[in-house]
Amino acid sequence: MSQISLTHEVVKPRQTSAEAKAPLLVMLHGVGANEHDLLPLAQYLDPRLCVVSARAPHRYQFGGFSWFDIHWHAKGFNIDTNQAQQSWETVQRFLGEACSAYDCDPKQIYLGGFSQGAIMSLGATLTKPELIAGTILMSGRWMPEVGPQTDREHIANKPIVAVHGVYDEVIPIQYGRAIRDFLQTLPVQLEYHEFAMGHEINLDSLQVVVKWLKQQLG
Image 1: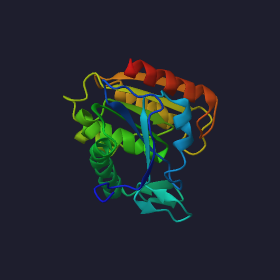
Image 2 (image 1 turned 180 degrees about the vertical axis):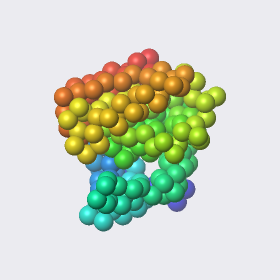
Image 3 (image 1 turned 90 degrees about the vertical axis):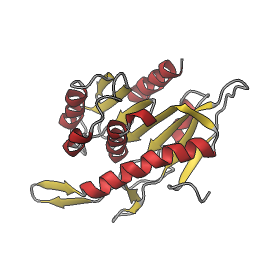
Image 4 (image 1 turned 90 degrees about the horizontal axis):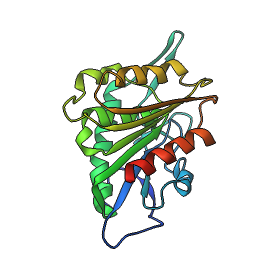
């Protein structure tokens, strides 16, 4: 579809209603992956959801795609913050496009991501919270550059769930705790969990996400 900003895959709702449009969940993958990476999770999620898994716009050096470039050096890494902002703005636009394309409920648009996809989900939520009904952050990181752009008025009461592995070797647990600590300064409805896992989505963390989504959908 020419009006859609990002390449994506979709899993249509397994349970539909004649009275209401389907809620939408847009999922964002991590660096080096693609739109197929998180799609298998759809089978475990609420059957009322229309699940759209989007592909990041930039090709990654080792294959797959990324939301922004990462430059590694002896002391750690730097990220292309301009690319990151452009990508979360693209995601914000994509939410409305996907909602229209699949005839979903614009008041029930959820956003979730893993790793770099979680970074994008958080950036999109903090800067345009009115577009998003709730956000799922899996093994992500908070970009301090987003802080000054946070829309503190519209973020009020926004439901957010964050999960992170205490043995995460890619985005260590202190980054998950930094997300928690920052979000605790905002008037959001935060649910935060740590698990005995690495940089992954294990069964326990997935069950938290499944339960959280069911609670949001009612």
